[in-house]
Amino acid sequence: MEQQRKKMTVPEIQAKAARGENLLMLTSYDYPLALLADRAGMDILLVGDSVGMTTLGYETTLPVTMDEMIHHAKAVRRGVQYALCIGDMPFMSYQTSIAEAVYNAGRFLKEAAMEAVKLEGGVEMAETVRALFNTGIPVMGHIGLTPQSINRLGGFKTQGRDAATAKQLLDDAAALEQAGAFAILLEAIPDRVAQLICERAGVPIIGIGAGPHCHGQLLIVHDLLGLFEKFTPRFAKRYANLSEVIGKAFADYKQEVEAGAFPGPEHCWTIKDDELAKLKAML
Image (spheres, rainbow, N blue to C red):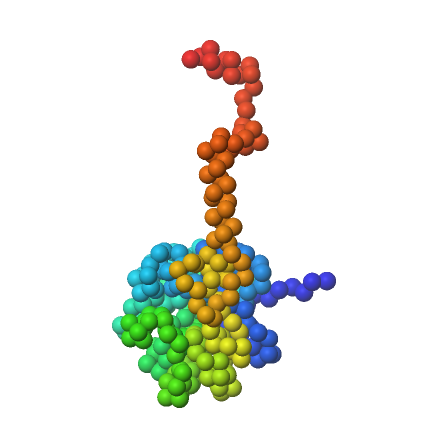
């Protein structure tokens, strides 16, 4: 008999990592893919501000607003039954003040039924994380390559490749954990640096481009499905090429409509001959 699947909560996420079981995490931005990801057994769905690039057509994540994030978070939540849903705090929704951070994080929980939030930054964000924790809002930290800081970082570049910057990552992880973060996301850092962080951490560490030693892995769903063609990060693995499949479907549709082959009889409703005759007599 199939075991009843548990609803994933913050304690369940931490317990799974403690048991040595790898955590499964994907980004999600809409109802249909959230439904499929949840059905497939994902532990965590992140409504990422990457929606700006994958779905809204922005060049970076910086233009994404809270209202846009809430809109997508609501859609995702409607499709999820089991996964833990996390709302990604967009640029300038938490950096200006702790009070604004608490307010905007609260919007995710109140308006979109998210169960946690994620924010970027390490030591400098510890007090914000602590305030959210004290308010009852679970927080996932995010260090390494932080896309909201690309202007300071000089682009989407790997972080922690020398001893000094790697040490800062370890300090950042420790500060976030001490402030109450329930988990930490590491993006685009060397695998052995991630391993050191994992060995010292008391909370789950999830990697996206941080190697195999993390307690779980995250991928951008559009990278996984082959739906984002501008660039593919080195750490992304394409498990399908839906751009090709969808492109062929569009081309086939175009060809059939132009040739008059679609719609066919099987796609149409009919009216009885006598009713049609009555209609014509009315004209």
